[in-house]
Image (cartoon, rainbow, N blue to C red; front, side, top):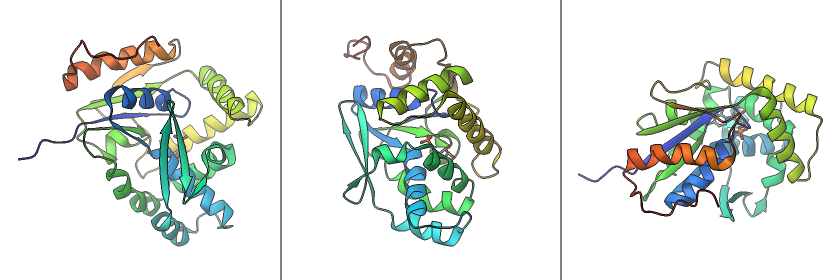
Length: 236
Ligand code: C5P
């Protein structure tokens, strides 16, 4: 019998620190990283550019099936490509996030993206970031985290992220966009955003990046028997 490829999942709302933590864990462990939100965002971008009407499920599914999405990781940040075109910054725009969340409520759209997400599970292991990683995509993952943070802190973080990417928006606008998306993602019937019953909660409101990493690292070492002597990079 072949050994199962290890996977750890990170779920939770936007701007709770999942992406930062996930990339760092993947880098430390030497595992693959799945940014599942990028699938929904890339599909939304394709749909917006193609002028699709909201709710045009049939064409959305066909776009999802033909989309050529790829990732490159460099210096702890992930770059996203559609074919040969880099779309990293475009995907972060709020209108893309909003459209992604509207499309993501369609069960047929989720089904069209499911198997491609699962193909990321390859040796030596996978860190999977999203809303339904621990509940639907990898329900048998031996380690699942669910990240939370106050609305105020999330708004500040998203504002900072957008600024770093040369995009700008008012705090009020960011806050209401996050709330609208939480509401939609958390109440849809298909794979709603929610913690798996066996998820470990990390509230990142008062924690810096190193503290969030250190907290997750302890669980990872225990669950996957990573030797304590191995360099974690915490504090760097
Ligand atoms: O995480 P991110 O903000 O990039 O995700 C964009 C949107 O994609 C989310 O608001 C959510 O509606 C959708 N999504 C999802 N399931 C995932 C990841 C993202 O429904 N696993």
